[in-house]
Length: 100
Length: 214
Image (cartoon, rainbow over all chains, first blue to last red; front, top):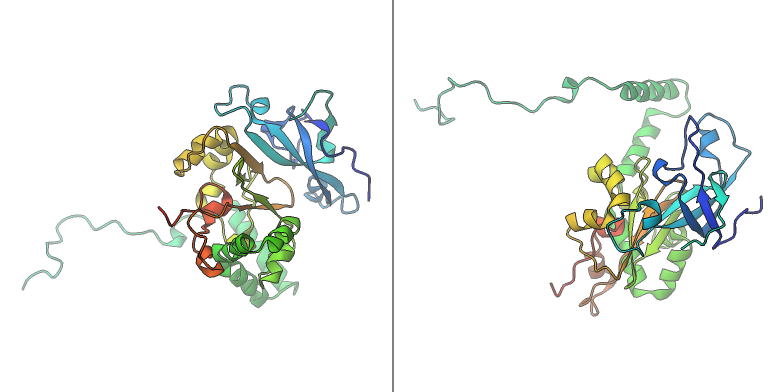
């Protein structure tokens, strides 16, 4: 078991990266900032498992909560609407700014 | 002698529903057939094993999820266990929810939850059965995260602005189930009667359970 890198409440950003292959970080959220809502636990890394690799290297999965206006600057609904997404730890980086 | 059809057949033939075989197989349909045949040929599993798995999938329906929700409405301790471990709570009711962890999200007067899988069509099949076609559509998957209130309104669900709409994008090996709020006017009803108010769509979060008061 590896120690989760981010605690609940941590301000995080989903990496703005565009690697080839099987990727589980949705395109529309890359580069977006939010906060760790929950640490789900360790899971196999789908980006390796998709190619028959990585069974021995589980990755911590987080539920990250983002404010809709931080995803869509022209979001039509009220600013307190949110989105929660499952993110693998290798897709998260620390963000100095405050999360929701 | 009169024509039993009521009219003469001088017009072109009626259009007919195409047979399954009239559409060409896609690349992935051929691949799936080939892999299944190989696995059976190599003795990894039998055709009977495969049929039983498909039968099990086909036997699941939203009635299973509704039983779980109705129990949570009448039994607060069960509800706590459901929120902590949905698969184990379902097993208490004799429902095999499988090995992929299901996470229940609770609607409150302040928060309305709704589920989508933008990457594909992840869905708690063992509690809700097969997903509806719209859940898998590109329109639902792309629009729910972009304009959730507009999508909900198309399902007839208009929520006041002071409620937080919380969209869950299911992208890992987790599945999501919405625990709706128990509708007003159901105070005297027992668990079985309550389950009738729990529809598939309100466990996805696109609708609310109707109230017997109308």
